[in-house]
Figure 1 (cartoon, rainbow, N blue to C red):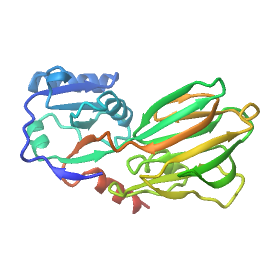
Figure 2 (figure 1 turned 90 degrees about the vertical axis):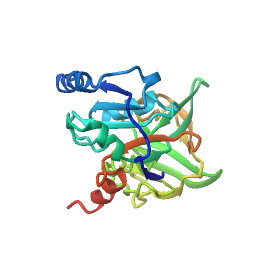
Figure 3 (figure 1 turned 180 degrees about the vertical axis):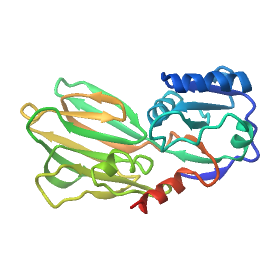
Length: 263
């Protein structure tokens, strides 16, 4: 991840997207009336109105399009969003700080021999599908690092996603510019004291599902789910850069730093 200022760029043509809530749709209508609206193919920037769920959907939608995304909170949490204000939007865009986030790439195989590929901005999760705990074998760069993890699951998180599901599973918060991935167990039963690992974002993590017929497991990349997996490979996709814009003093780097000191 890198961070910079956008003072030399112009954001004249704006594409507005909104969540399907009345609050977000009303905000979009007022902003379109004030600033106009263009198709995303012609836009200098996309302004997303909603919560973190909409921001993730927007980032996925424009992945590979090389267009910056500026979010304003019309949802509940809004960790990835800026404060909502109708006035001064172009000045805010001009002064915004730019963060580049690289997503994870998941390649998963299932019991039927099918393969699925998906990107994750927050995390790739392996989750048990039945009442029985999952049994997982973990490889890092082709070497077995954990012969058997018995747990509800396992997740690989980016720095941007380290404050989401990863934090709820007692994983570490990663600075946004850290070249790392967090490998975090979900309710580990054996080895009971294993709390996970920090890995280079150049590492390749492979998870094999043991006894997959008896202990089925689903793989989830953000919102995309692929069930009955037998093997999942996760890497950081350095070829894809997603650009987020935040107001000065409220960058993702600053938010993640503040989160580490939250009582």
